[in-house]
Every structure is written in structure tokens, then in C-alpha cells.
Image (tube, rainbow over all chains, first blue to last red; front, side, top):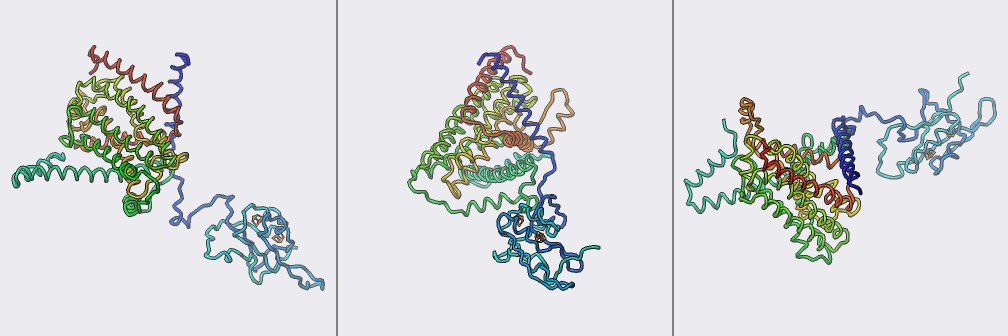
Length: 156
Length: 359
Ligand code: SF4
Ligand code: SF4
């Protein structure tokens, strides 16, 4: 180390220390980003991409969009979804496959969103309702279609 | 209007002397001074832990403790109670005597240094004519405690932590001593009370301008390293050594190390305030008599605490800004940068004093 580079290292050192200190001082005056969760649960805003639990939206007539095609079950990497279908007589006399139960195991889901992306009918979405703790594991197995719900009629 | 604590102390002193024989009056006074110091030590430690957690949170854009009491002010009280109730876990194959002595060595050393600080006008428990030497000598005893803790724990992490601590403290002690020496040269005394009195008109950092300021900055850096706090926290280094020298300690013994760490921060800031920033003396600017007169109305212990907490804030700012140094970088900083600069600074200060260029 030559003498001039030693002197220079003083300058470099002091400058970098000052930069660091000024950055942390800037942060010191910023507003805290902490969410005070139980107090603000009614105003809490989750980020758009946050996924908490898979849901199947139903309209006012208790109708969903799931055609029981089973694609979501196939695309799920860890067997979280089970689509159970049944056959029913349609109005024109033919038999038709309809959804009986759409079973979703919350405890097994990795929230990868593959099921939502591959569903051809857009029948399932992720909700942001994260308060999902329960006392027994069996309660994590959910049925997504509501009892008595039917497939939504195609708009003509 | 007199808000000074000294008035209260004089009242107590006169009351005791009037009603009791001399021996008992002195005995009771000694006891109550000791108790007051212990209580002050504990309360300050709790306050400092709270301040540290809050300031750290603000630097990290968080809120910090906010559940126990308004703004979380009782958080450290709750933590202290928890610490006192915790079990002291016996460790197999430790050197029992040294293991259980080490925390007391550390806390006794910091307690003795704490007692030498001039807190306010006329309030100082220990005042030697070699006060600066006393403070440096006593505060280095805590290294012994840390080394003993690391050695007796029968644990490699503790041992490495203690060895690092030894290397660090012995190195930085030099810069601490040399920077204090610069001010001792300027003032010509080592007695802390005299040092403070000499700063009545102008603080030493202004009296000795350039070299005093350099000494002040060196003292802050080296003192910060002496307290074993980040970025100089190699002896503890959570991410490498679990907790370094106090890995094996639990319950109240861990509490002692924890307390001493925070109080050492206060002590370093207290010495810096006393030696460089005028101790309990109010801010006086020669010539501005009206301003000086107004400043005199603020009680001296408030001046002292305000300066100390300002310096503590600086140390927290540094702590939460920089990452931990490596051991070679640590020694590099001391031996290649701070030490030569302090020696040069002493030379400048000597010239300044001889030529009378100071204020
Ligand atoms: S998010 Fe992924 S893991 Fe969860 S159900 Fe859908 S496909 Fe399966
Ligand atoms: S949710 Fe979508 S992908 Fe899954 S069975 Fe129903 S329609 Fe098919």
C-alpha cells in the first residue's frame, strides 16, 4: 500500500460511511409500513397477488360455472383438488356429466395458482380471506360448490 | 427557582446530621447513595432497552414494541420480570466457580464506572484526582469477565467469542485512551469534576476545535467498539456464534450481561459527554450573555441526560446502519487508521496547547 493510496482509502472510507448513514437517516423518517393487524382488520388491504384460499364464486341463483371437466384436478401438482361428478338426465333426454362435489384440501395447497389459470370456464378464483386457522386438520378439507348449486345457464 | 438535585441532597444531609450521631449519618448516606446508584442503573438499563428497540424499529421502518402499555413503554418491565423468574440452567462440565463469577465481574466493572460519572452539579459518587485513569482502568475489567465467561463455558463458540472480544477490546482501548489524553493535555487535569468545571464557559470540543473534534470522533468510534455492539459485535455475532461468550448463560446471569451491555453504552456516552461536551454544564457561548443566562435555567441533570441520549442516538444510528466487520477488518481499522490518527492528533493538540491556539 503506497502512502497516496492510504490517504485515498481514508477519503473512500469516510465517504462510504457517510452514504450509509444518510440512507439509514432517510429511512428513519419514513412512515412505518407495519400493519397493526387485529386492530385494522376491517380496513386491511392485502396486495393484489396475495392468495389465501381457493373459492368457487356463486351467483344470486346459487349457480356456479364449473362444468366438472376435471382439468383443475389434473393440473394440480400435489393432488389438492378432487372433482367428483355425477350423471344426470338432461332436458333433451341425453345424460350429462355435472358437478357433484368439488373437494379442495387447503392444508395441502401450495397456492401455485395453476388450477385457476387452467380452468377453461373461469369457475374458481383465489380469495384473500386469510383467517383460515382451525383446530383439526379434517376441517381443512373444504367443499367449494355450495349444496344444491347448479351449473350456470349459458347466456344466449 | 432551583430545580437542582443537589438542593434536595443537602436537605437530606442536614436532616440526618442534625438527628443522628455522625457515624450513623454517614453510614445511612453511603447506603442510600449505593442504593440510588443501583436503582438508577436498573431503571436506565430498562429505559435504554426500550429506546433501543424503538429507535431500531424506526430505522427499519417498523413500529417497535406497542402492546404492553401505551406505546409499549412497559415492555421492558415485563421482560425484566420474565428474566428474573427464569430458571438458571446448570451446565455440565463447566468450570463452576469461574462460570458463576463471570457475570458478576462484568456487571461490577460497569457499575463501578457508572458510579464515577458526574450526573449533575454536585452529584458524583466517586471523584478521584485521576478520574480519567480510574474510568479506563475499571472499565477494562469487564474484558476479564467476558474472557472468563467464554473460557469457563466449555463451549467452542463461547471461546471464540471471548478471544475475539479480547483482541477487540485491547486494541480499541488504545484509541480510547489516546483520544481522552488529547483532552487531558488541553485541560491539564484528570479529575472529572475539574474537567467539567473548566468547561463552564465553553465546551472542550469548541475550546480545542480541530484536534478536539477529531479526538471526539475517534472516542465515539473506539468507545462504540468497546461496548461490543454492532458493527463491532463480533464477540456475540448471533449469526456465527449463536450468542458468543454468553451462549451458555440463562436466567439472571444472562440478564447481567444484557444489562451491562446497555449500561456500557450509557457509560461510553456519559464519558464522551463529560469530557468533550461539557458534562452537566449548560451550553454557553462567550459574549452572548442573555443566551447564557437563559440556558442556566435548565437544570444540570437534564443537560447531562440530554447530551448522553443524543450520543446514544448516534451510536444506535451507527449500529443499525452498518454490517458486522470481519475480525481482520476490525483490527485493520484500529491499528492502521484510528491509532495513527490518534497519535497524530495528540501531536497537533500538543502544538496547539504550546502555541496557545485554543480558545
Ligand atoms: S393452487 Fe396449485 S396446489 Fe393449490 S389447488 Fe390449485 S393447482 Fe393445486
Ligand atoms: S373448476 Fe374449472 S377446471 Fe375444475 S372441474 Fe370445474 S370447470 Fe373444470
